[in-house]
Length: 158
Image 1 (cartoon, rainbow, N blue to C red):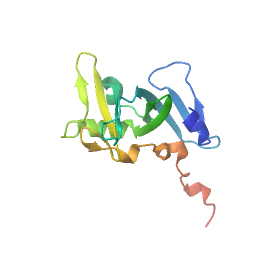
Image 2: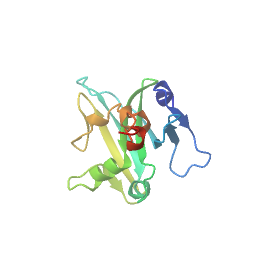
Image 3: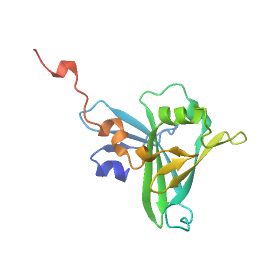
């Protein structure tokens, strides 16, 4: 929530948790992002000093949910040496696309019905060999933090 507030975006916690941890919005704007926060502590850094990895789990039922309005986003937050180090901001739609692709992505656990993602944070951010660098600290992907869409009715008469 502090990251959103620092970006002048309102953050609200729903009273009832049905899979959304935070609502993000800006006053005077219609766009709302529902955010599911997943946290992990970074493990010991790689011996070569090139980075570290973190492991996250996502409920497969939530990932496969057919209704996505307003869109759900995941904020994967990595804790490193008592500080929040990195965030992956990725939409449920994109995560589902990566998981359903022909190439393996993460590891599904049938007993817990969870998808486990081991993310490597190096110069390039990857999971299962897939490049996730575009999502690293990508708060701008959240609809309320994008530039307002230019609506036809806002243009006025020609």
